[in-house]
Length: 494
Image (cartoon, rainbow, N blue to C red; front, side, top):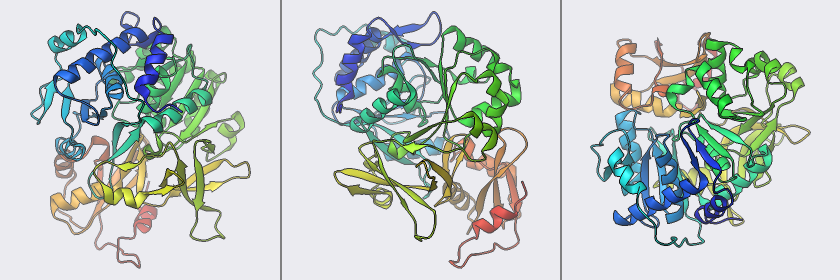
């Protein structure tokens, strides 16, 4: 198995030299040869600014050719990168950067008032692009940490998952085999670069000789132009969170899917959108539709289920399929008489833990037979055919708009900001997109929604801020002396 992805990409780039690796549109396309050369120009620039093996960098989450080249340059040089959403809440971004502790921070939009920040303006990028490489850089055949992906944390602080070249090498091969990704595949990059799903977009495309089509944020919400772009560029593989499909149907109905060239449609990050897929099925009946699942800690995905027609129309809960053969798994149940339990994953695609956070690493990870194991927190049931279905969570983590959210992170920030002893956040359904909303329960009757949202916006991402406040006279506690979350989850009206 491949240890170093920098070495491997050199082989891929040589094989597909003049083929388009990345297409932004019909007039802005970049070949494998160009992308590889640009990454080496960045390596030379890294040397000038004294960036080297085992250093860590942060990159502003921005879909331009330089971002993808920076990823490759980092892999080749043995540097760990992390994409950061600079439009996120200021204090949350600062918390992430403090936890990451990068040697350099690269931005494209503006000069950042942060230590070690480098503004890659147009003039500087042109200079880097013109750097001529006299000889190839030597790459060590060694597995480094490739990237750090940040997710919500139950302690109130974001946590950064470390994923290595070795982890990714298994994922790249599995993705190619599972979804038949090859030279003729044209994949969408709908997912933000700081979002876990983008790992599939980047690594399973350009490391398998396919073409990647980045979709900008402003393009996603203009659905007619979006489908025209996908068709003009011959996109045939779509991967997104189910929320995006729901939004498309809410705004443009089924017309979005009448003309499409999609052979493979993949949904992941939230429960499979059965009702929405039923509405578009007659337009995509020749497409293969997958439900995928997997935690960030296990390199983006660990299972994929090819959804059949009868399941779409007659099932209530779609299976996540069989666990990839790169993993061993066990279902940890506190009672042997129960048919369900927490899913534990073990294998070479499991992360080594959270960056600069030994306590949480020890809580969630364990060593096993030369590999790592991870306690996913997902409660699953195994069916007769060995397919798994997720039936709940061991903890209070939720998936909202594709994002992993630890409800405790919201509650801790609310309690700290407003000096409350306790509060409770729950997720409930609503009739309009995004079809779910976060509700804060509090005993503090003077707290108003406008004040709550304004102050939280400095500390939390937009998708983590409650839309509504409900007041309770006195919280009902469980036998452990904590707020009875299940009691309020049942009682709050949808």
